[in-house]
Length: 130
Image 1 (cartoon, one colour):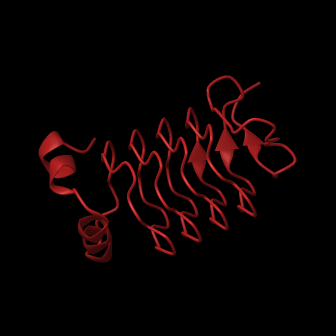
Image 2 (spheres, rainbow, N blue to C red; image 1 turned 90 degrees about the vertical axis):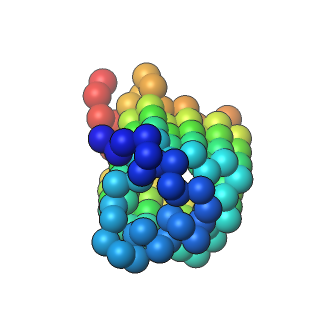
Image 3 (cartoon, helix red, strand yellow; image 1 turned 180 degrees about the horizontal axis):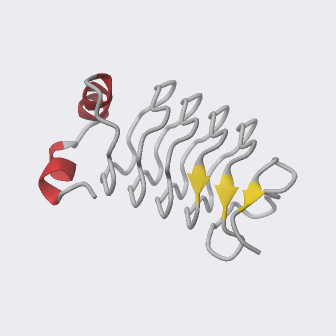
């Protein structure tokens, strides 16, 4: 688990992307509401328990990322690549998922929260449990 000092050092999109470019992948509990990460590559990053509410993630590559229990409420996830991502308990309420690629992303039907009217099975997602 990321210690609070490491999470506290990531305060901007630039700091997050620089740490990722340097090889860091654990960004658990990072607190970046409203962050602008459009088009970024964070493939395979651990963003579990992160606050990315109202973030601009348009066109981002988060393939295989762990977003378990992350807050993406109100985030712009248009054209995002979330193939194979972990979305267990993720809050996606009010997120924009227009043309998002969620194929094979894992979700928990009891804990993952989707925008109103969103059908995870139609999006090709996998139920983590019944």
